[in-house]
Image (cartoon, rainbow, N blue to C red):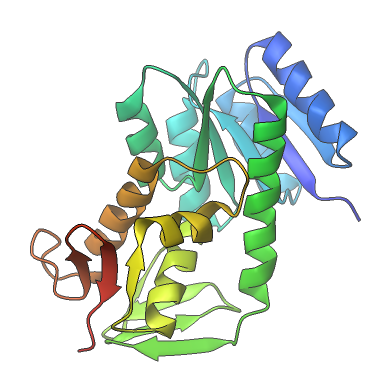
Length: 227
């Protein structure tokens, strides 16, 4: 059964082009043009991924992202403007999994969609529970507890955290983490990787500004402390 995609874009030319490209790759695609209808459709129709423009009339794409992430682990791929770095960071903080910058090529967008869906399937096939450094991950239920307290994570954050918890003490380079995130011939932006790490620290550290679990290895990448 083909994966179901919800495209949320208020510019008809872009919406039509994205929908056409995804349908040509075998996806089942619906499209809406505003945030309110996006929320209604996402809640009612069991999509596998949302392709979401952040600049929408009415309910903003950022608010759509926040609300959907607060309710489920539905993957979200943002469409953002080239000049809006702050918007991209805020979108990741709101729970988006990845972003594509306008103007983008259709092969790039399709590749990112496939990478996100592939990661989702790999996550489902993982060993059901992992534990390290006071962190416990239940991959079947998509739940994370830190020192016994539940924390909400996005699918991309879960994928990164799973890698760290599986091998505490190992140093992961940014390149390795970017491959974990995107697994695509179109490499992700290193700033997006760092934004996901920053988000994780806010969720698993007592003091995110002085991390004791998820540590920076200067000039290399990050590691999970063996505590």
